[in-house]
Amino acid sequence: MYKFLIFLFFPILMFSQQQKIDGTVVNMQNEKLPLVSIEVYNSQNALIKKIMTNEEGAFTLEGISEKEVKLVVKDLEYAQFEKKLDLDKQDKILQIVLKKDIKEIQEVVMTKQKPVVKRKIDRLEFNVENSNISSLNAWEILKKTPGVTSGNDVLAIKGSQSILVTINDKKVMLTGDELKNLLENTQGDEIKSVEVITNPPAKYEASGSAVLNIVMKKNKIEGYRGIISSKYVQSQYAKGVAGISQYYKKDKLSLMASYYLGSGTYYREGTDHVNYIEDQTEWVSIMNRKDRNKSQNSLNFNMEYEIDSLTNVSLNYSGFFSPKSFGTYSVPTLIYNSQNVVESDYFTINDHQSRSINNSLSFLVDRKLSKKK
Image (cartoon, rainbow, N blue to C red):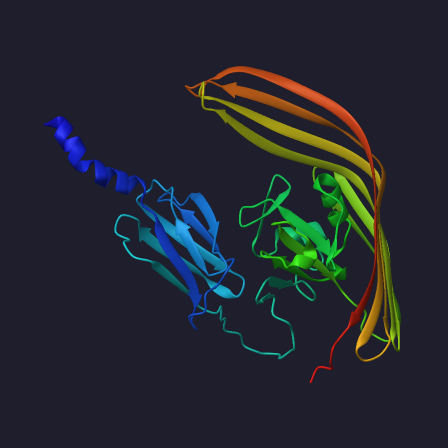
């Protein structure tokens, strides 16, 4: 009889274990909203899962053991949405409607300003120019870009860490810490926007990767202007950057050049978990990286010339020079047995020195077929 009851209720048990809920996020005009952040909290208000909607505004909730959860939906263009959900009773597609974030103010001053986020056919454009984050560096701006997540100093789009970073559509031939150092020494007041391209066209040669394209500002003011800036950051260790930017525009010619020098100590910490199925052990390693770099040099140059109303030529150069970086990596590792008890541990440490030189030069001729009407 006992075996018969197990056999009878086995399909129901399997269904409850494999239950998943599909949903969509739309606005008041019933337009589907891609790359919207959805956070899932349990009954103790602890975050247990974070997902993003896809290009069609759809998402799937699965792998959640709690019966009752709270959904928090966030997007820069819309008011925050919260909803409590009973997963056992939700038997149809969940539709979430976001409303514009409207606040009452006593006085209104009308100014012409680009929207912070603009969705295009193949990409999401995050407008940095004249925003409240333009005082940050490029690395911090990328971490705050909608659709981009970061963990252990690694950027990800829709959970994938396969990302190609470009500046003005030109590939940056750096990865890992070298790329991070370059972006940390690129100042936000020179950035116009960041484009998140989840399905990049062939010109990027992204090989299935998503693209983060940093669009730098162009000089639109006649004459000459120069900017000298510096920044000092004191966290666990001190870091600083100083630089100069020069702009010149006259008739059809436009020039821009900038140089930044960064120096400081960089400390990063990351935790790795490795589970072995055979003996049911878990290895937990904490990597502590401390690097000292006295000279990080970033150089950018751009020249544009308008031959006629349909033809433009441009010359672009970007360089990153780090003659000497030195530091230590220390990695303590704990090994847990199947009862989640530490049975052994070991410690590794190494020191290193490195140097980086990266140059990128491009020449572009842009010829339009006809004038815009």
